[in-house]
Amino acid sequence: MHEPVLRAVPDEPVVRPVPRAPQEDHGAAADPLMRDLVGATLRRIRLEQGRTLRDVADSAQVSLPYLSEIERGRKEPSSEVLAAIHRALGLRLIDLLDFLHLEMAPVAPAPMAAPAPAAPRSFGGSRALMLAA
Image 1: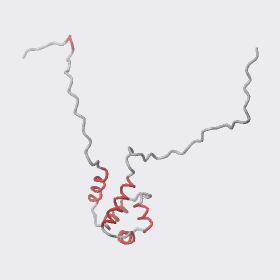
Image 2: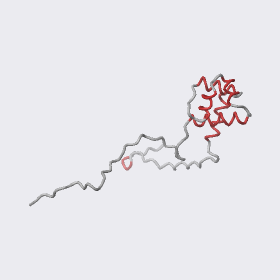
Image 3: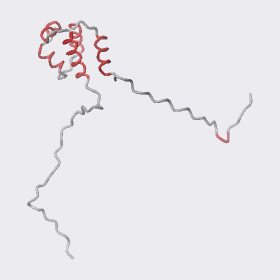
Image 4: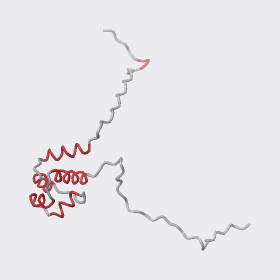
């Protein structure tokens, strides 16, 4: 008997999977990145105050491009830089955190599941000793 011979077919290209770099999942179910929330909140507050990037950057003593990158979520500021920016906007840290909390909180609270009723406990089953008081 002859063993089957496998031959490559020259007309068909060989397709191999190409490994991809891991990508961040920014789907609807995923929590947003903190730097995105902080940046968007700082920008919203600045615009509500009618202030320019240059004005806030000068007050906070940070460069205008750096403040712009923070607002766009491209850079994550250190606590010192964040403090300088929120002070330049006339905010306390707790005010900024409150704005962030309101941004992340759902419009309507999710319904909480009722706790499961407690199952009756069996203390020893059929071998339990019952004592009268």
